[in-house]
Image (cartoon, rainbow, N blue to C red; front, side):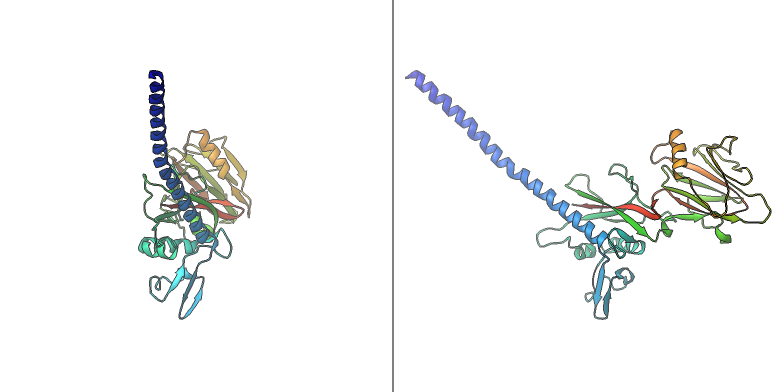
Length: 336
């Protein structure tokens, strides 16, 4: 009898442990699946927002007509009889209009709630927040690199700050940007026009010095010819640490030369004959040179140009890559 009692007590203890464990798991699982459902919902909204912005031209309509040039109707945004949604595409998917990007940036900063309404981020049971930015192709969540235009302004960073302690869905999409003139600095006495330097550059007695960020996404020299007949011409491009200096950057006559240090050495990193009508894409050469000298992503580098009797332009950007003749970047969307 006593042995039977012990068995019943053991069974009761085991059953109690089983029931306690089962109840704990049963109460825990709904929270797990709720989090999963929440993440799936956020990802869906981020993807949908990416489709609207990158694949659609946008649209507007009121009593006077309709069209896709919503970005030119800023005086109508928010009026009760004006209906629109702000797509950024320019005729085809992932081919974005620079003007629409800038307009969306201004719209989201001036009327955030209106943007949420027209993009469908405010529903009957949930309101979503968002952040949209245009970033360099090698930008990462831990080291973001925003695309800037030729005057140094961030092209697109709209919405609320991304929270550090919340479920946030991130969606990236590679895009082309047109036109890219406003994204790429073109300088170096172009066709006898007035020089237009970016704010990172200064003019020192005809020579230009700039502070750039490594890695450089685009560095291409387009040579049109000599600025003066029967005169020596050259183009020297010197890089150095910010703590260093570049007092002179003169190249050999008839040459385009690139080097690292206070001046062009006898054995430059790059040297070639100047040819009228030729373009020199020096992007990889320069980045390889800087990497060998210990530069890391985000480091600043000093560059100086020694220009003599040359008619040329410089396509320069440290945030936008030029691929197949088009400016390439990625649109990054966060939703929470």
